[in-house]
Image: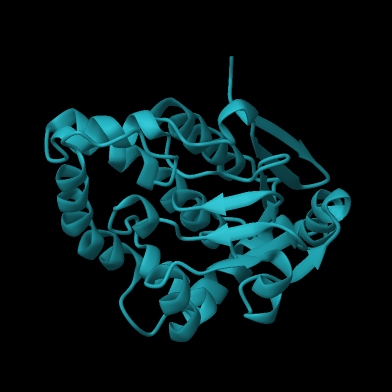
Length: 253
């Protein structure tokens, strides 16, 4: 069964991660489905905005089986491609032709945080939990995590989250400028959809405008794509270092 749901109405494509049993932790197959759904949104000229959500829990990172397999030999071709597939899921979000909003309830952790930060705007539940989490399980961050954090939250918050393991609520995320609105969980999806609908009223204009927005507001430091490559080697090292006799790790990505 598909673990990605796709619906489009009123110019808004809603893409929902739907693997609640593992809190939407990304497998290679799920990542590929997500990319396919995003391709569908791009191909539909009537879509002027995209909302990405995860139901009760946004995304707990990469699936533990993907990380465990990669830990044995991160540079082995199949394992390298598996991690690459996870990266591609949120990189594709950043390439969407339409403006994007993340609707976040529950937790956004590791690769799930990357997925949230890949969007142009975030609406969060007040009690949502956002954290990097990589160091907690002995992994170097990956997927351009620092570049995403710094461009969204600034250097101080990026250090607190990425280096010192801080976890924040949705309310705190708004205070830090990492999210636009913190609302009750029941209102997250509708708030995100209403914002998206405003942009989607004129899809051609919204697509042209978001392209200018991203070019004009991109991080003045290391770009996201460069950040992915900077983090790749030390993350692979941390995977291999952790592998011998390691206990199964929670999803993080």
